[in-house]
Amino acid sequence: MPTIRARGDKFQAIVRIKSGGAIVHQESRVFSTQKLAKDWAERVEATIKLNGTPQRQLKIQTLGSLMLRYLDTLIGNGPIRRTRAAEIEQLATYFMRTALNEVRSVTFTEFATLRRKEGTGPTTVLHNLATVRSILNGARAMYGLNIDGSCVAEAIDVLRRMGTISRSKSRERRCSDDELNAMVVEFQRISHNPSTLIPMHTILPLMVALPRRLSEITSMCWDDLDRKQRLVKLRDTKHPTNPRDEIIPLPPKAFEIITGLPVVDQRIVPYKAESISAAFQRCCARLNIQDLHLHDLRHEGISRLFDQGLAIQEVALISGHQSWTMLRRYTHPSVTALSEKMNAGQRQAPQAVTESA
Image (tube, rainbow, N blue to C red; front, side):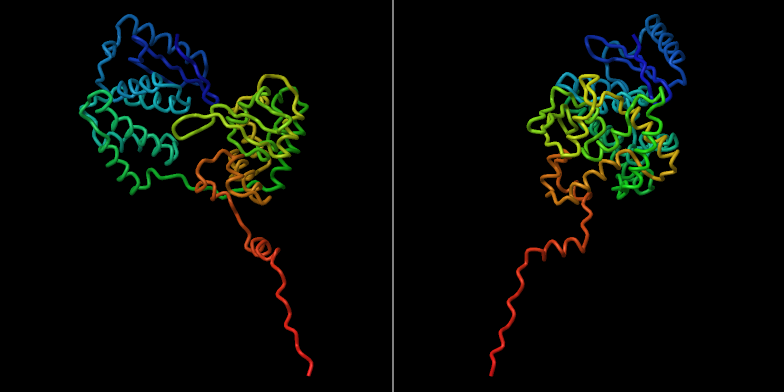
């Protein structure tokens, strides 16, 4: 059966053929309606059933088939994050017709140029190329293929100098009290509309009070909430190599908001992250709030924890950052406040005693 996934206001159809538990062929396309996506996928499956696929022998002949084999190996070694699997699947679809013996640095400069023309950001394209390089560098040891990732490295070097790709720039944008209050009031205004299902007027303050990723907030479960200790377990949280479970302390405001929510599902915030993000963007447009991303609420929440005087290791327990270096960019110390803090406990120097004549 084909897979149909919602991608914003469009639908992606994925046809995946397996043999012996391994993915041997995959195709995908994006359509404006779910019906068009389903019809295309069914036609592709019927054609493959009639004519077969060149990948049935599990021979790694193309870069795309190598990527699918690599993904199958990862899955066989344990669970991987959905976002990583989706990225590899997307790359495999793009490179499915690229023969391994024809892979050159120009293969990836053309790929990057096309992705940028499609509107993909420079940081995302760089991440895609890094993923391809990792797969190619492991191909020799894993599958005995005489290929490496040096051609990708050459392309990355050229594309960086051209400005086509780049590392992410740290955002300094914070959400002001006025902006947050305006959005809460706006969401309260429309909360009585029958079409309004998500209590955004509650979720936005929660995202500031508990500065975690939106996917983690929407995954929290009531069974993992310790009301007595004011702790919550976050399951399968983001990690550079392996997902992990975390037990974190809830800041007072976050605990107050969570315990005031109705129990309608096993999840505390039982809504799709994509729907929350879309509602946030529409609200910013209505209120003419410029250059504010939903993820900036996490930045704001972390900055407020530092404003309360928490140490960097204490903030890390709440935010989930493993690298204190990365967390430092959320600190915005005030010169005046720092001076007052250093001098607050300082004893007054004893005044000199002048002996009378």
